[in-house]
Length: 234
Image (cartoon, rainbow, N blue to C red):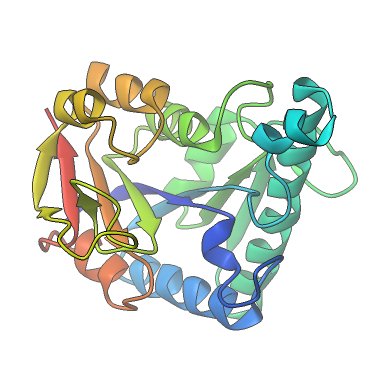
């Protein structure tokens, strides 16, 4: 059983069938799963993406400067973080919200020591704003924050059952890995997390659990140490 985890949520995971923005039903499901894990005395931090609203990588294709686009993407993560924070609070979950991108009126600035203090007091801590810098993805932010708060693992929530040798949404013969090494992920170019995030995890021996968010028991089962999805480690 893990005592402290970092949950990586993509913005796309919050869309559901909406195609854009936040599906209220999906947000409620995610919040309930987080609450179930917290109630088992597992400390949870979460890094949330913004791809359901805006992705900086698309900026140049739309004639927007990449740096400006990345900041737009960071603002999108703050919007998602606010939504998750309010959803958790509506369920009676004590949560703290911090952002690497300072927006004083709506969110506290990132503070590592305060985040750890909140976790030790049983609060869910939500991190938004990526790393606060352009050219870094929320995958890298997740690896960085996990290391900073001394999480025992990153839990990456996805739309599929784990890590496959090829895209299972396009190939019916794709094979699921129960366990795979960081090096093999990099060598095969598998889309688990970006190369910078994988390298950070590999250097610091931080395992990654990749699981399907749609199965509402997966997060709880994985937090309790059951084999769920794919385990990425050295």
